[in-house]
Image 1 (cartoon, rainbow, N blue to C red):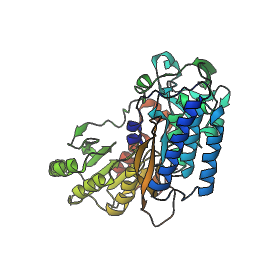
Image 2 (image 1 turned 90 degrees about the horizontal axis):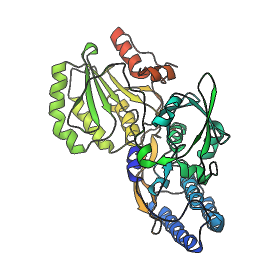
Image 3 (image 1 turned 45 degrees about the horizontal axis):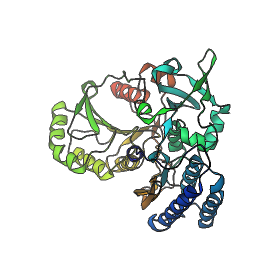
Length: 420
């Protein structure tokens, strides 16, 4: 869901300004937009007040309307993000990035409680790997506390972290929270291990920020990925382990999996693969029926060790359909889940509809289905083998989780129940 979410929000609109309080005309336009938003929440969400009390929802809305004369556009949108976040399901969100926006030029990733720069523009290349300390004097812990109430795509503490990693770069959100000021650079402080570095940073365009992902390429284990006709899924044959590794980063269409199933089966039979590894890390979701089609395709292969030879890799970005398939593969493929907890809740509100506000054109989504995928109440799918990537491994290109799993397969040892 979260990657599909990103595809929805790269629109370009010209409504209002972010620096000064709203004009009378803009206030009226936002009043109409807010009323439209409220009406859709009431009528289109399958159960809008499953967590947030209805009275509290209306109180928040009325407070926003009352404050419109003294708010900027960024503050209005930040409050709408906060109201959507309070609905408390990761598929009901307000998309600030569906309007004009900029980003500070850093991509971040948590390693434990340390937030590090994993990619940036050439101007700040010396800060790769540095630990963010503060923005305009606001510490990372304080930033987290302030942003957490606004973040979209959140089902639990794990998806909250991954959402924070991304949205901390969003200039307009930091404007709305009054952490940065319009038209001014922001003071970023980083720890490099040897010293603290302070730098004034200005936001960049979405097109420039969109080029950033991670400057650290995986080099270990060495994989040779091949297309299997299923866009979003590649196959690497690890012959020394008799393993088939599927990098399942996004969801192909159901018919694409069905059309190429027989070819995939023939490839795995020829390779005499006995172990299946399906990697859902970083997968924000799609159509979980496509994932089920892949499992159905694989199940006819009697050569697979169906007792101890199927593994699913997960992390905090494993969300929506990817989380669902993680639950399902544990059940129907007898899979062992390896990695860190999923960002998705196994009992989730999902399958959202997307709406556009009539005046501003901003978009928001609301859940229209509920899926209880687990009889046990839990906020995430917790792995059978817990392994968190280390900064040192990440820095050197080593995939901590996959390397560990393959080393155990190579040693022909039974994997322990939990690795901390």
